[in-house]
Amino acid sequence: MVTAYLLMGGAFLLGLIAQRRVTSAFKQMSAVPAGLTGFEAARRMLDREGLSGVGIEEIGGRLSDHYDPRSKVLRLSSEVYRGHSMASVGVACHEAGHALQDAKNYAPLVIRNLAVPSANFGSGTGMGLIMLGVFTGMTGLIMVGVILFTAVVAFQLVNLPVEFDASARARRALVDQGMISPNEEPYVAKVLNAAALTYVAGTVQSIVTLVFYALLANED
Image (cartoon, rainbow, N blue to C red; front, side):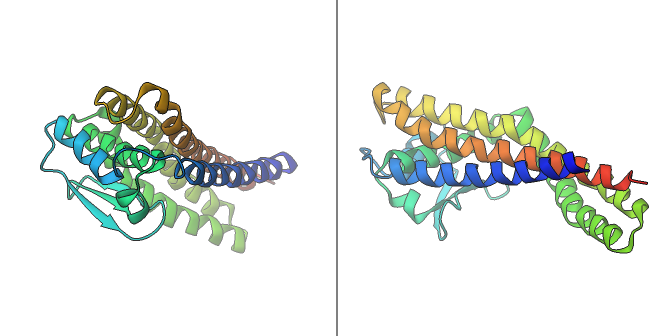
């Protein structure tokens, strides 16, 4: 179990590093000006793809940006929505990339959306059973929880290509549509690559958690 504890510690550390990198990259690229706001960049990208019906709303929070496939709305934090920076246009167009995926029935996104209920159930109920099993010493409960938690791992794995593809669409659209120059694309890439590390870290953490508790359940 020493190896398992080391893996858990390493996964936790990777998560901290990933969060620090994305925060640092966003802060740095927020100081690099762009010729339009995050809202304007996302709106232009969506309209160019015939998605004028997709709305864009300003919301509170920091880095709380997301695309809601049920309401067909991009929700952008104020810093991104109003910001005239490479960070703002990069994040906004990444979320617009998800809207494009949705409109084109991008297979990994379809699978991810279908997996959300199972992942939520596996995360809540699965971890609850694991904790109860650990507290009571009932390894059977731990194993049932581990089985349910596999839905979280599956969700994380299918989420990776969804996020990478959305970033690729954003970077391509920003340059192809003349919103930034090719020389400015690395600035956007810095933010989006840092964000990608957080998805990788989340996937690693879920896999390590699964392995850790599976080993715990199989202890004599």
